[in-house]
Image 1 (spheres, rainbow, N blue to C red):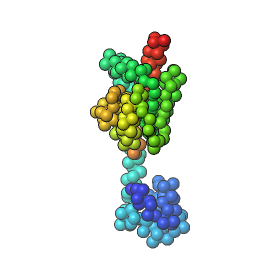
Image 2: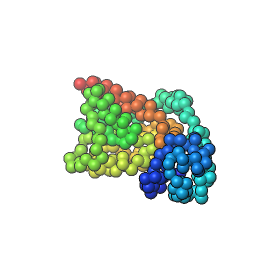
Image 3: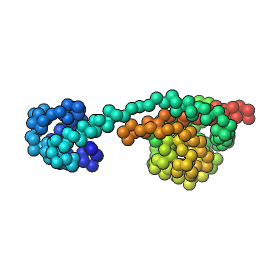
Image 4: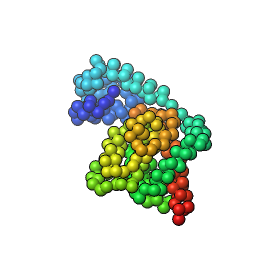
Length: 243
């Protein structure tokens, strides 16, 4: 309803009106136009112009749309992740999944440099992964600056790319830049058929049900933490045996 494009067209009075409505949505749906005008100290004609910018014929239609928006929000329920995680941990007990982790850990242990990339919540976990690997003796770097020029030959390096959807454009472009500089790519994604999984040299997928709240992806990241920590421990064990 309130898109960025529409909000950008609001003048000073309309912006005051917008802020009041956002803070008092439950109250506004039951107000008369005159009541809202008094509360916000704007004219009824300003409110009507505001409504027309939102593709509403008048204040009554605006209130109906606002009420529908509130009803949609109230219907959203956040499910418990216990069942999803139980299924995931059950899948980790099979030999195929363990073999993938072992293969990934082998590649990481042989690399001279380990980089992590990701954005949003995946970026936070990428930073955590770099710290965790470094704590277990495999020095790793989280590449936070997407626009950092990479001119060095990254031969014998591996980049661990994190993405829930496996379709994030920023992460994909970063992967391409690293591949052009000879870095091997190991991705951790929710879906093994995603773009990032397909362009990677190796992929570990965890396949849990994706969840969204509004436009935010709130899919549990516990499987990613588990995979990162298991791989780091495997890398540590391999380095200890080699020593």
